[in-house]
Length: 250
Image (cartoon, rainbow, N blue to C red; front, top):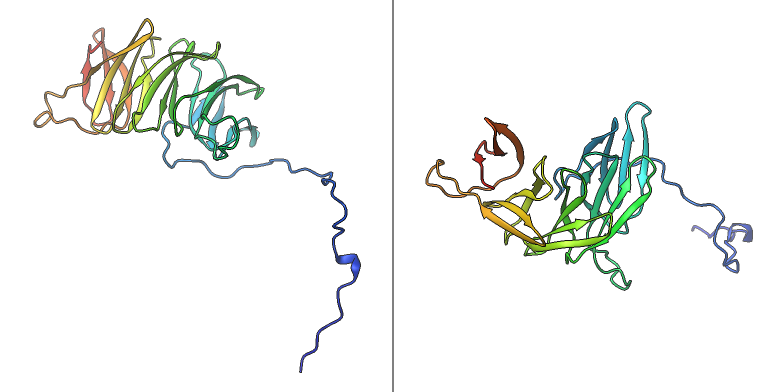
C-alpha cells in the first residue's frame, strides 16, 4: 500500500500575512496578431510605420527596427481606427466599457500622436454600444463617428475642441464605411447593407441624398462594402466595391 510522503516544509508555503503588493510590474513587450473581426479599414501607414489595433491596444509597428510602440489609453476593445490626413495623429474608438459600475459608461474616441503616444483629445460618445467607424475630414479639423447601435448614428466632431457638431441616424441596416471626400470638410459618403448615401454638413445639420442605381439589373440596391473617390472630366465620382459609379450626386 502507498503511504503519504512527508508534509511540505514551511519554507514552500506563502506568507499570507504579507499584504503588500509585489514590487515587480509587468511591461508590455510585444503583441502578436491583428483584429480583423467586425472591423474594416483599420490598418494604416503613417510616417513609414504601420498602425493597427489588437484588443484594447493600438500598435505602431516600425518595420525597419522591428519594434512596436503602444497606445494604452483605452479601457476596452478598440473597434475602429483612422489616421489624420496631414499629421501623425490617430483616432481610435472602442466598444462600450464592460465595467458599467464606473461613471464612464459611454464608449470613447481617443485622438493621439503616433510618435509620442500623447493623448490629444478624448471624446465621450452617445453611441450606446460602441463606435464601428471613424474618419477625418480633408483638413483633419473634423472627425466623424458611426455607432453600432440599431440606428447606426453618424456624429460629426470638432475633436480639438472636444465638441459635437451634430448627429443623425445613418441607416437601419449596418454601415460598413463612411468616408469624407478627399477635398471636403462638409461632404461624405456612407455605404452598407443595401444602401449608399451622399451626405452634406449644412451649418449644424446633416442632410443626405440616396444613391440610385439605374443601370444594373432592375435597379435594386445592392450591398456596398467599400468606397473610393476620383475625378473624370472634372466630375466628382464615387466608386463603390462592385464597380458602380455615382457622379455629381452632391
